[in-house]
Length: 304
Ligand code: PMP
Image 1: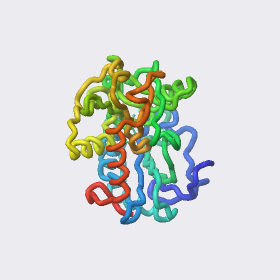
Image 2: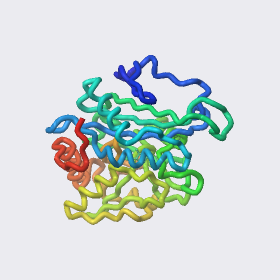
Image 3: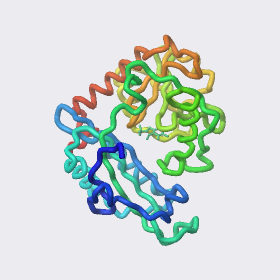
Image 4: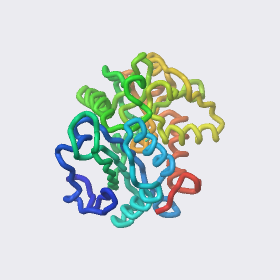
């Protein structure tokens, strides 16, 4: 495996990489009945810290609700497991992947007596969208695939099965020579990336699709809204954004735990602004990286 992991936490125990196995008749493997999180640990000036762990844990338990997944571990137990996982592998910065899913018991669509299994892995992960993406931005295409509507599946839950849609959109983009996709919702408005939220800058103000646009309520989205407002920017975070507004934006950028703050330089081969990282994007990106380097906003950092 390309992943440099030797220990994985599974259902209360630390197991070796090669023993972290599931049965092929695992319910979630057949029906996508799992929920997960993606979290980063930053090597801050005060030592390694999990960024916004409380909010990720909140979303983890909330994602489980519509599927009636019964996570039998408390927040404290999952926190302890995660801290130990990072510690045992001597990781100073890494990505953390908590997962809860219907395991093996019966294979009807109804999960019946399937157990809710829980696992956590941690591994080093660099920039999500390529090494020069943070500085120079990425080229994206508007996918021909639409996002699930929130009337079809809870789009505010981070469900494993949802990500086949993300995979289709992302792979379509990459087959066409782009780095990533932008996905429209069922109404045809801009929703988000396959694994990122999206921000638009116009006339010095920020716009990002509202929660009713079938997006995931991103934690980095919230971080960036907070950082922008603290710097005096107006953020319109409850709007619909039409496809055409992408091309006429002054700046565009993605946010996400994996993608962090990634500028978008072209959409469908049309240059956005000057076709590079815009000044407000750069200011907020710098604010974001300064924050996770300093680690000095106590409520957002859980030191390991
Ligand atoms: N939208 C989708 C579909 C995602 O998968 C992610 C990544 N979790 C995001 C947005 C960004 O969310 P966050 O900032 O919480 O990572």
